[in-house]
Length: 256
Image (cartoon, rainbow, N blue to C red; front, side, top):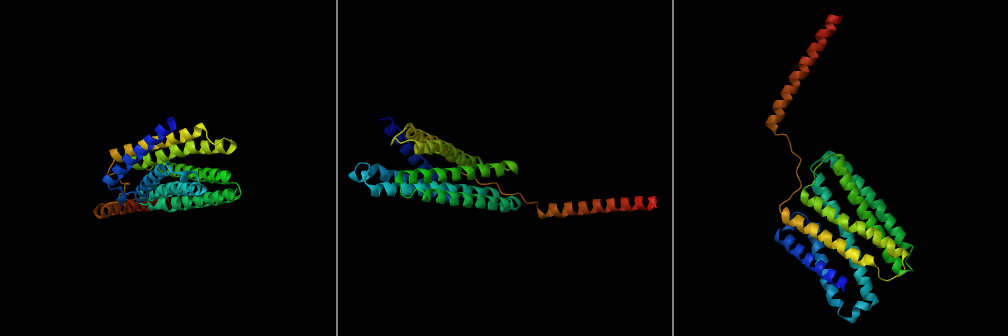
């Protein structure tokens, strides 16, 4: 019973978030995040409808559900990539090495995910669980890597972007433990199902707060020095360097 209540709360939070995202016209700022929320709501509405039919117990629906789950989980990677691009692209000296590092780590982890999953093609339950675990670990590592890059270069992510990443981190951290527990367990149901729902509800609340609080939050652009100021500073630097050279030449002449 409590699982049904938590699920209803999650559905309501998803609808609230979708309405806020559409009202704030986030499709102009965070295209992938908007698409993710939209597809999530559509998928969950479909799940609620199918749950009332006998089709929900079929293998076909099982495959459809988990394909949609993998697709939505994969979109987390694109959300992280979108935030990284919007946050770091204004700093070319940071963006170029950071984008290459994120792409390299992401490619390596996705290759590991595919290889690990293919080992369990003959075992449907482990195929799903292992694949989901590896994908969630990939998302978590890339999220932490982006935050580490931000901290290393002392950049400031906009509050909205930071809250989106925090929400993803809350959900994936619980998901990692849940997947590991269920892989080792033979029970079809565990308390981790409710923990997943609660962690995702928490993530939705964090996202709702971010979207509501910072509706126009854009990534800060790198500040460029105005041309007039650049010209003024260039002449000052030139004069100071010339004075230093003259003093060094004078001291060199006295020493000889």
